[in-house]
Length: 476
Ligand code: GLC
Image (cartoon, rainbow, N blue to C red; front, side, top):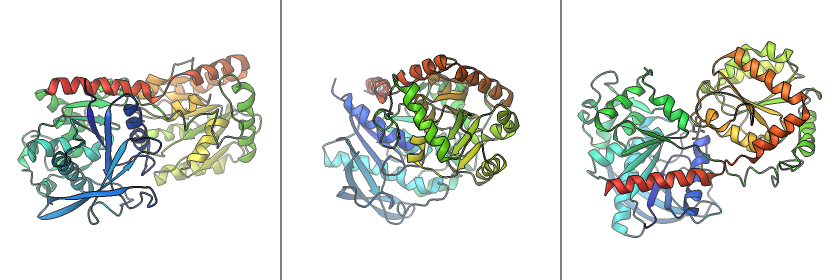
C-alpha cells in the first residue's frame, strides 16, 4: 500500500505554540507517524507568538469568502524540529494573528477551520502533497467536517480526535452565516436542547467520518449511556447516522526530551539500575532548594490548575495528609481561585508544602527527578501525560482511577490508584504508597518497573496508522 497522505490539524503544536498536553501530542505524534512511513504534514494558525527566528518560508496565498468579504490567507511552511515533517502556518493579519491570550472562543476558529478547508483546495490545485484524510484535534477544528460537507461538498474523510470533552467551543448558531452555511444544517440535526447554540466539538462529533480519543477507558466512559450533559446528545445523534464507535489510543511521551539518563536539567542523572542511589541526590537537592522537611517523602502535583484536575480534594483532606508526615510540592498555574487556595495551603504549612504558581518545564524536570510520588487527583482524565513522565523518572503516581490514568498505571506495580473524587480513597492510597516507601527494596522495585514501561510514541503511532488505513480502505 502507498503511504497514506495525512494532514494533521490543530491549534497548538509544540514547540511553536503550546498551552497544554494537546501541544505536546501534536508536536510528537507526526514525527512518530513519519518514522512509520506515513506521509504526514501538520497545519496550524500562524500566530504572532511563533518565534520569528524559526525558519519558515512563505509559499503562497489564497482567498476565501468569510462573512461578507474576501479574505487573504497566507501560507508559510517549516518543519517540526529534529525531523523532516512539514508544518504549514495559515495566517491572516486580522483574523488569526496576533494571538488572543484570553480564553479561546469559537468565533476565532470559524475562520481557521474555513481556511484549512480552503487550504486543502489550494494544495489540490498546486499538486504535490494532497491529503487523503484530515486528522482534526479537539473543538478548535470541530467545524472542519461540517464545512467540508455543507459548504465545500467534499467527501474528504476526517478523523476527529477528542482530547477533552469538557471544552466544546460553544457560540451562537448565527455564527454559521459567516461560513455561508444555513443554520438549518445544524438545527435539523439538533432539534432539542442546544438550539440557538453552536457547539464546535458537537458538530465535529456529528460530521467526522470517524472519532477517536486519547485512551481506551475514556472512550468507554464517554460513550456510557448514563451521561446526561448536553454534549452527549451529539453522540446519540451520531448514532442515528453511524454506529457509535470511538477508538481509544493512548498518547505517548517524548522519551528523548524526558529521559533521566540524559536530561540536562537534572542534577544527578540515572536509569532503572541506578534509581535507588542517584535519584536520592535529586531528592535531597529538591528538599533543600525548597526548604522542606528533609525526612519526609515528597508528593508533587504538576499541571494546569483547572477544576478537572481535582485539587479541591487535596484541599479537603490536607489535615489528614499532613498527619501522614509528607511534603507536598505544587507546580502549575491556571484558575485564579484554585491558585489562591494552593497558595494558602503553602502559607499554612510552610515547612511541608511548597507552591510554585507558574508553568515551568525546566522546574517540572527537577520535580519529576526529585520527587518520590506524583499526586494526580483528576476528576476525569482523557489521557494525562504527567503520570507517564513521572513513571519514566521513577516517581510513582498516586492517581484517580479514571481515563488514561487507569490505562497507564498498574495499581500496586507501577503506581497507586484511588476512586476519583474520594478524599478517603486518596488518603488510603497515600497510606499504601507510604507502606511501600518504608520498605526500600519494594519501593525501588516499583520504581524500576515503572521506569521500564514503554510509553514511547511508536506504539500509539502504529495504532493511528492502522486506523488511517482502515478509514482510507472504507472510503474508496
Ligand atoms: C487534554 C486532556 C489530557 C490529555 C491531553 C492530550 O489536555 O485533558 O488528559 O492528556 O489533552 O491528549
